[in-house]
Image (cartoon, rainbow, N blue to C red; front, side, top):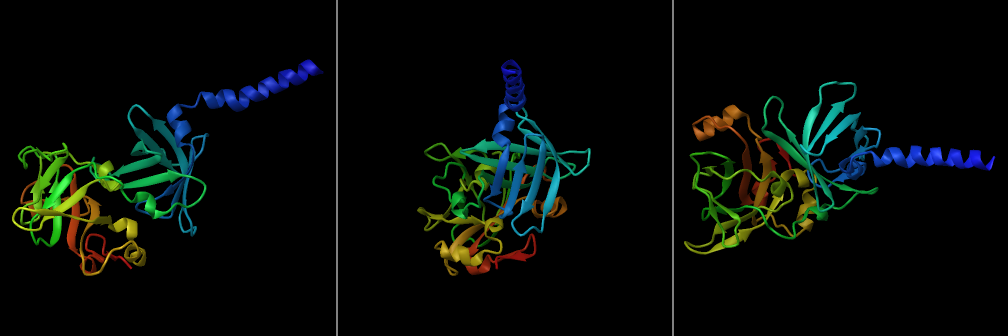
Length: 283
């Protein structure tokens, strides 16, 4: 009887923990409940050890189920929606306890949107997204410039690469707000708030300009004011990548643009409430 009990416990231990040990380490890190702390705030992703996932939000207006596969070497999660056998390829990256998901538009490699998630059983604060350091690109805007800015990345005939004194990419925006640059886009720094902005205060000196993501504060305008923003002060609002059709972008640059285009606007906060690319408001 004792031998049979020991044998049963051994089989149970192997079933529970032996199979778990064969799950790739990246999947072990992925398994759990993740809360969005960037755009689509309120979304919850749950990845399970049986390769099933659920995406839902706190008011139960969204509920998606399906299966997933993770490919650590390629940095890809293949997401199957429902019983669909055609996956959505999502680039992923673990960074300082966060999971960053980068979605692409159908039929091309252009960035659609990015989402930052943090693991935990409870909803996290938007303060999780407040950057403590700007380590990405430094974008320099013309003096007194107001309006939309479009940066087309990875252009062979674009603005030559220059760097700040601490080695960060330095991008200078022309007076028409349209720039082609040889630098590549930095989507992970973008969604983590690590790209910094400055504007010429005089002909020689510059000053930093605070920035925020439209998606992050969509439907949360009062919270934005509570974080020390003022309606008559000047800020940069980040819209994301490729928020206009390629036809519209090509018309703006008067040429065929391949690759990703980052879009943002600099103006007083009261003039940043409306998002012309999504026809929505910070309310």
